[in-house]
Amino acid sequence: MPRPLWAGAISFGLVTIPVKIVSATEDHDVHFHRVHLTDMGRVRTRKVCELDGEVVSQDEIGKGYEVSKDETVAVTDEELEQMPLPTAKAIEIVAFVDADSIDPVRISDSYYLAVDGQVAVKPYTLLRKALERSSKVAVAKFAWHGRERLGLLRIREGAIVLHSMKWPDEVRDPQELAPKAVEVGEEEIEQALQLADRMTIEDLSGFRDEYRQALEDIIAAKADGKPLPSPDEGEENKAGEVVDLMAALNASVKAAKESRGENHDGQDATVHEMRPAKNTGGGRAAPAKKKAASSKSATAKKTNASTSSRAKKSTGKKTAAKKRTAS
Image (cartoon, rainbow, N blue to C red; front, top):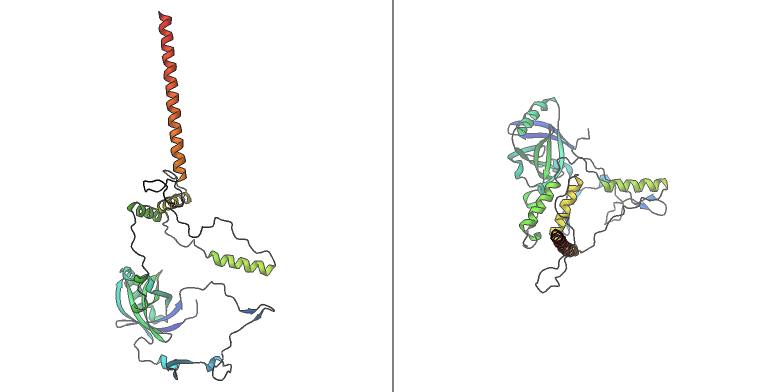
């Protein structure tokens, strides 16, 4: 079990549940040291006071708030811990809401809440069962790391999870980022929905961090004095290439079907560049494959017509010969 990060209690009406916060996730990133490339010596960050130029130790460093350009007020950890807040040592449940009403963009870090002592087992179980039997999640306030935070309590495999949340005014308005209005055809929407349906899965456990694996392979090769792994050869996307949206969707649906071992019904879809039309009718020039198909079709029709004509002539000659023989 990881080391507890915080100890306090859940305040649920008149119910108090002593709990400890432990991290719900692990950091598997590859971390680098800053080194002097000449001799591989570590390069460390020195904490220097800008007034006297002296290097200071960690116990000489504290928090300060700049009230004005010439005045900074020091605030100690003890003063922060003794702030007159009801949430200083409590995760205070203030409301219950429908789980679907929470915007995922507001959810930040996640933590498990573990019982702190035998006395917490029964009220912890009570809150867990109440949340399990409803479609709601609990909204709570708690103070941590020098500020009051908004949290979300829900159940995951029998444990209460605390999600740290952004306050409403901390979420930027996306309206200024929204693209300009553009018309999208119903057929394009249906193809996009079909592609989403083909790509739908129920389990995400099969996904892996391929970048981290590739980075570890490079480090292992360098440590063993072996050649670095070469990148996989693949088709590179042409930057700025404009493609036919419907053709791209058709090709994507086909690829999704093939990846699932399904047969592809219908004509093959291809992604092709959109070029200006050369005809005077104002329409877009037909793709090369369609032109070739049309040419082949016309040739086939001519061949069939010629064959049919020769067959009719041959049949007429045979009939005339029979009549002369009979007479």
